[in-house]
Length: 430
Image (tube, rainbow, N blue to C red; front, top):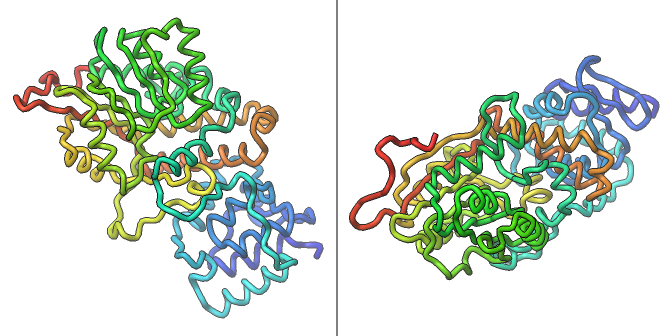
């Protein structure tokens, strides 16, 4: 085979029923496809075997993470061009290539099998999450899932996130601002929405590396309890708290939100944590936070949302994200989140959409990662660095194209008197 790229392009176009929008360079050095398009590099036949044994998104993910597939050129452009052939086509449990059973597709599939060589399925990359069978979102499974994502090295996260060490959507005054300023402005926005004042108690659920806890204590004089399931995050956060001289006002715990029992708190922040809770547990999560607040206390719930489906029973978790990024994570429409918070007893007073802000944030993280790629691969692993690059770039496009969103929901445990404590003007915090 001296022209694998031309053969592969022909078979894939026959299989997919559409022209490939990217150029292909195969393992033999041959190339085929649009001359000015991004290049999809198929480094070996094993990449094809991954696609054939796990057709669709998971096979592509395994090939990317293992380094069998790569992209040269603009990653965002390549993902945008490929999205119509992969993520937007839809796929059932049998896989993308089995969805159509025409003779042409069968012929193309046989051609790919021949081109791929040995029929044995390649082992999944070691970065893929292996989980035992059982119930999701127990204390044990949640701790394991959080560890998979967050315990990959604080030095790696420092490289990606920058000095702010905030792993959630920033709040940009303009596209030309700095990531650090935007993250500081986001933390300050949360504090203002919660109307924090000196002497109050704040619970920060999913406190990460301690940035929100430190900002609230230092700038607003509150006492903070921050909780996380990640041992590495907790150790890092405690060190930062000590360096800031805030150990008398900030306590960092390795604790599940279901085990917090020292309320009431005056305010609760949950920033980028609720995506890990799961649909079956979400009402319990909301009820637990409601119980932990004093009457009149406020909750700021900052959470990614997906678009609603006509048939919600058809919703399935993104297979790449579930296997490599956020195991057991689930996204819900914003309407569902608001309804669950109100079912728990909250009065929802404000919803602010920050979709474009997250696209800017993700592009900044990708730029940080790419700016020192050799160090990033040393700090974790080449496969893990490829996971982060792909998921952050693809997520930036998803926010830009309005496939997903992110919202800050301000809710109050309104007392029986009905006095919410909020100003008449809905957004005085701005």
